[in-house]
Length: 263
Image 1 (cartoon, rainbow, N blue to C red):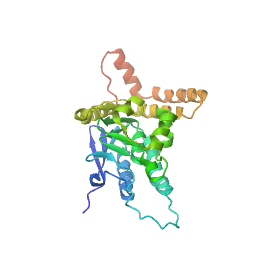
Image 2 (cartoon, rainbow, N blue to C red; image 1 turned 30 degrees about the horizontal axis):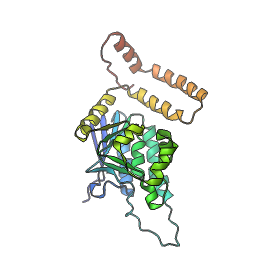
Image 3 (cartoon, one colour; image 1 turned 180 degrees about the vertical axis):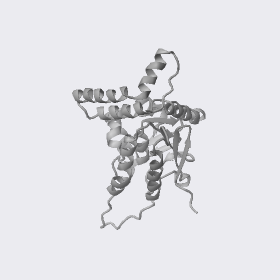
Image 4 (cartoon, one colour; image 1 turned 90 degrees about the vertical axis):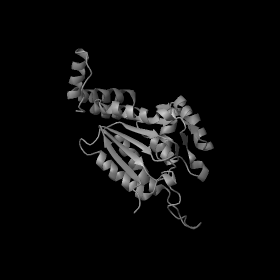
């Protein structure tokens, strides 16, 4: 019996999805995408989790798409490489962005191709110092996908996005942090504990407010100033109507830690 290609664990309000094909550097297949969708269905159940962590088993986060899965067609036959984007990667990226909880990518090693951009599509990226990010697409005559052409120029500017995409050279986690591409690079021996501590901190926080923060900041990239101000008014009204807001104010006035319930 084959081992599952996705592992799912729940503990203390934190759901952890582990990409589990270490013999193939956790590269993605159709079956793996299906398992990942099923795992996200469980994560999204009411009350199941308040934070999601995505990481990889073994020595890497993921090598991207498993190119050995599909046989190459004959030279005179079309090969619809975009189909797996439409069917798998694009819905996944949209789902992670819309998920009403913080999503942490815990990048424990190489993150290449589409998987690098899955990691960058998460809300926070924490990487081990030995990790690397690789926009490998040009090596096989493709363009960055899985949101790469959207995220890269917005995070690091057009010049660096072009350099990463055209040269297809690995970028160290340390340089990725310095460029503002990821949230944090930590020493390998502190990586697991840093991820756990960050996830637990978020799991004890005002989860509904986190969902609204995600919504507002992601919208800002495409809104004009007036539209963003109007969105802030609407979302702040929603946040101000929550029990967590009342608890936060009471805790501040009473000089005690807040006990947020995520509602």
